[in-house]
Image (cartoon, rainbow, N blue to C red; front, side):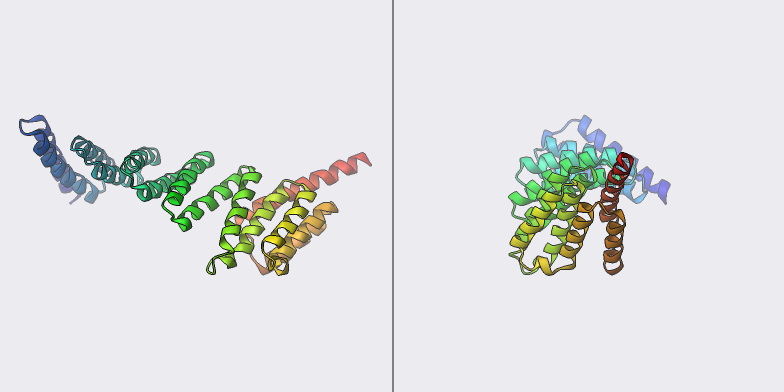
Length: 290
């Protein structure tokens, strides 16, 4: 079955090339070639010959560009990217970029946003956080321009997560605070506010500036008067006190207590470990001086 599909794919591809290289009206020969390329790519896909399918989709995109059908060309690049995703993230990213540029040119900003986000997620899977941030920020801007706020915020939250991982704490804090502020006025989202403020507070703790942490907690109370009654607020306040007292044991106990009630995810744990290591280093430094 597989070899049969590959043979069919190659046959359709040859027919497409013959149309392009033969005589005939410009538009009709590219339309006919596009039809054969479509059939060829489908056959390769059925055979799971992803590299061949992707290569043909790129040729199909070229036909649509000749016919000035940018939307169809962009869609063909997306199909190529989806085939490449199975075997080569780098090639997939390149095809998605072509699609994003074409969708942007014709004003399909929602589609451009969607595939910018997809590129960001591919870079995330490759652990390339700086590049993931670039594309997720672009996606957020495009979604925002179309007033698709929920999708824009999803992208921004990813950016904040990666920024904190890369120790760009002010950037992360700014995003979490901005989304917390937006969410307060939305009945569906206001329950998420304490989580955003907790994340912002943890990023503040990583900056190891107790005054900034205290000021932030006051600011968060002003922003959301209910926050001071939450376990998240108490957690941040107790951690700040432990840092102020330079008490590693107290810090560890506070983390353990919170974790026993609300499991800390890997991202929060990473940040808290950074704070704890800094606290330990300070304690050792002071022991050396005495």
